[in-house]
Length: 293
Image (cartoon, rainbow, N blue to C red):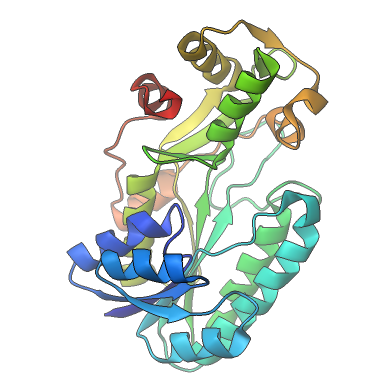
C-alpha cells in the first residue's frame, strides 16, 4: 500500500514512516520545508512539498495513494480556533480526494475528558474541552463513510512520549519547571493524564490504515491515567527542584489542561485490532533520563 502521511516529519510522523516502511508499505510524506523534505527522504519515503493550507496539494497527494494518515496540525495554542479551522479544511480536501474509493483515511484526534469516569472509544468530547475542536473534525471524517471512504479516528492521549520529544506537554512542563525553579502541579495533583509511547502510537496508526473497519474510533492509550503529582515528582527529582502545587496560570496554557482529570482506556481498541503497547510507560520513560539531558 502507498500511504500519504501529513505531518510525516513531525513527532509521531517520524515514528510512523519507518513503521509503515518496515511493514512493506510505501510512503508519500507532506513536507512544508526543505528540512522536512530532507528528513522524510532520509527515512526512506518520498516527499511532497506543501502545507495544510495547500488544499490542491493535499488532494493530489491523497489521490496518488492507496490511503491517507492525517497527523499534521498547526500547534499554535494562542490561535487554537484558527488551527482547528485549518484542520477542518484539510480533512475535507483529503476526504474529497478519496471519495468513492473505499480507501482508508485515518485522522488523528485527542482522547476526550469525561467528568467522573474513564473515557472510552464510545465517548465524545464535551463542548469547550481541549480536545473538542479536533474531535469535531475527526467526526466529520467519519461521516465520509457515506461518501465511500474507509475513515477512522485514532485518538491520542495528552502525553505521547519517547526519546527525542522536545515539544510535547511533558517537555513543556520540564521547561517551565526549569524557568520557575519549581516542578509544579495544579490543585492536589490528583488529576490524571493518559499516555502512550510514540512507537506504540505509530503501530496503531499503521494497523488502522491496514485494517480498521470503517467508522472505527480507536484509542492509542497505554497508561490509562498517570496522576499529575506523580509526573511533577519525577521532574522535580531529575531537575533537583522542589515539587509544589502552583496556580494554574504559572503553567501557561497547560494549567487549564492539568486541572482536568481525563483518564482514558483503550480496551475496545485492543479487542478490535489486537494492538498491545510494548514500550515503557510514561513514568518509566521519564526515569530513563533522556528528557533531562
